[in-house]
Image (cartoon, rainbow, N blue to C red):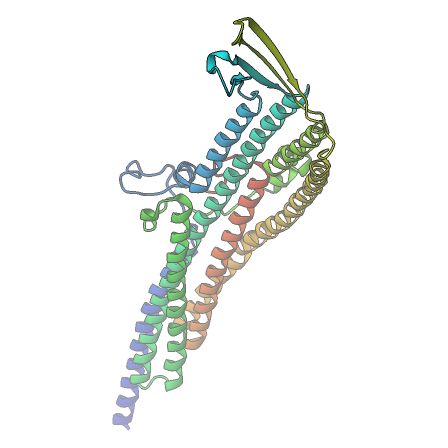
Length: 447
């Protein structure tokens, strides 16, 4: 009897020791998970050596993109080209120098016996044509400037979204890495329990499944992080910065007051609308210019010289006017009228597209604000409380090891989902800012 009691006591001591070991490992994992639950705070200002260490802030990323993006350089070049066309359009054609020798005797005499003149000829445009050419050129410049403004706004939006994507995936990878550590600790504990005879083999298998899942998720986030960094570097025009660390954090709060700035405040000044209005103005000017095309330009010339035989000085005046009999520019007027209708339709389509984008972005923003608040204020606190209760219950023997594994997994999944909701919130706000403040390069969603 004493031998049996001694064996029972040894088994009891071994079970308590294994439980203490499991608790210590799980407590460590819980601390890791607790760290993952904390908001990613950033310092009040970027490190002073950020430029030297290639640490990128959002402001720096936007500045680099605006300075080095090839599409913006191309748009700037189009403005210069349009300015050159506008300048050239207001100029008359160059005068023509004419030299002539007429009535040159063939059988006798020579050049000195011919009528010799030298003169200047100039084509005079029909009144109003150059005025419209000048206005068309100016509208082309405004169109190119509006397109550049639009590209800048889109680039700022894209850089913000890419920057937020990198921050979010970095955080997801961190949380996934912490989950791998917890899962590894749990698998080790389960293996020791099985070896000691305190648990069945299925407990070890159930502990190893979350470990494999966590490793798979971590690998996926790491690949996604590489792709996100490459996308950001391409937008900046700096492939060498694909590995540069980022400074910043996703905003965890946002105000719905952003939605108070409705389309009536920004639609008319949005670069897309400004560009399509400039295109419409240009089409209308081209139509008015085409209506003047049948009226001919006059070519006038004056020349002076002498008559070879007598040496008498002469002056000649010339005037030529094309007769608009065959070509009355009907095709050009038809094309111009069609371009006006196209521009009008494009303006209506772009305004409707912007209104739809505003409605969609507003709904996405409201949903993201609500979901982030729900996770931050309700789901995460409940997940943390549940994890603490199960940990305490496991220490007291009220819950099994599998219950603890399930709770850890649920808490980790809640943290991963929270980071994804933060990304959705920041992207939705960037989309709204691109509509409301397309020229703004100052972020409002990072700390």
